[in-house]
Image (cartoon, rainbow, N blue to C red):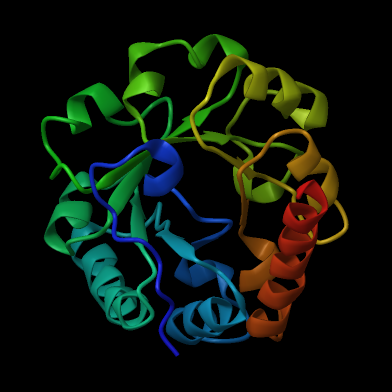
Length: 227
């Protein structure tokens, strides 16, 4: 069953980034199923945006994986984001790219990518939020929230307290990532995150669909409690 998410376009941020559950995945993350099956099951369970992260693959192999995933994400009308690799993002073509502090800058990406391609930007401390690059991004990823093996090359974890400060400094959509699972989602959402991103909580699950359903239910419950 296809999901009817809004088309990515030149719209206000809240409309351009309406996503709640974000899967960051690479082939090596998927220990029980292929990356294709993991992603499809995760989407069926409630994931509504997917980022392909392949730090150790060359362009050719990265693109092959991206093209396989694009077939799946298009079928379900879920955006596919490429981590870091601009050429792969353009050649797939993906719905956007995600970069960190040591990657190509969002201000530069604005002149390279198509207008309807999203730009995500990881911020590791509060001083990075007011930069031109942060403001050029379509969403910010607070990375990491908690210490995690998948995010070992970053600064001190934000923790919920730091996320609250970040929320007070920007109106941009905030994606929280790093050490998040179904037992701590509530505190992260209460601290101001708009979207929850996970790696292991879904990709390493024996049942990625069920894992995604549990996470999404927590998000929906939080949204309902705010009404």
